[in-house]
Image (cartoon, rainbow, N blue to C red; front, side):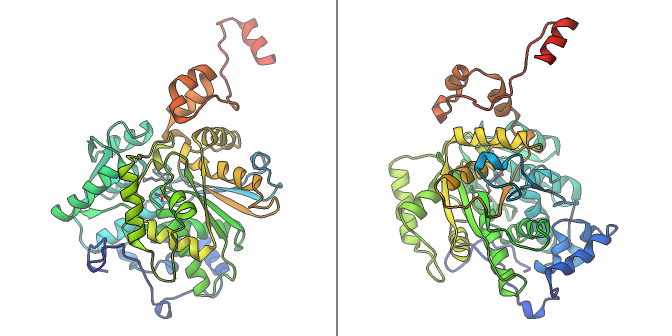
Length: 443
Ligand code: F0G
């Protein structure tokens, strides 16, 4: 607890947080957490993460750094449900883009900054496709005691996210390379300069991200859904969600574990290939790392690189692969992939449902539609999709989708397989003339 390790000194794989639950002050029933609702003056009861402190009991109260994260929206999305052929009342969208920095990352960052504070860290660093850097920058700026450096691939980051890192005043390094390059470098930097690492290979990040599942259960008035769908990138969320359900079952707070479906982009499908083609799985207490290494070797030999408009999940080598395979094992989970066209179409549908999300998040609804068509998920089942990022994170792609002709879209994004925008809400150009404006409104 008082060290800053991010990989096992013996085997080199990631570390995991394990609790001795017999020493924890656990509630008897999940309903007991409702007592926190009345304590709005207490920052720990107010935070959507720390309201579940008893389920991530690694830090004492006085160490906790919170900015009021996790007050997110859980929506019964009856207007979006028909797109995935779901019955009314069965599809739920969990809008994690409603966090202070506009993505789910804040759930993990409050926990990682808390641990950083506990070990006396004086600087923080991360590699990012954008949202991690925005979140690190926000916590660093609000807290003021842990200055941060963020590494982003040059030209690889959506504008909203870059804007945040710049605005919050942290040091931004645009590295000539992609996310995987940044991830490799940041591990070296963290070691060499002894800087605290904020990426999701930090096990404390995942502790905070477990609470997204607790809030879904809360949204269902303390019941579990049948399925949870989550986009897969570096696989921190899926790993954390599996751990959340596994632990709740272990301590007897739930009886049934939902099935996890991790949805990846067609152009960044490492996990899909590993699970569905290579058939590599968690086998009891480990993963065959030699098989994974051979897979990556082949990937490099073929020079296959991730490429998707969902830039948040444009990742070749997900650092949490092992933990994600464990989560799939615990939840009887599965992996599906969707094209960029499917992602953008689903994003427009989610937007029309009222709150919206960024492209990577929409992979969930696109995946649900596909899994419904294949009859893997039933119309009647209760499904929660985790929408990981805010719609304003990547406005360029949204405006392009709604404003450009199919021909223009194909020209710019044809390389990503995007041919048109069947759900475009096209703005109408009108002269400054009252009659014409009235006519356009009435049309
Ligand atoms: N959705 C969004 C909006 C993200 O920003 C990310 C990851 C993911 C999904 C994937 O989540 O890694 O837990 O599987 N973004 C990271 C970043 C990599 O640097 O911001 P994951």
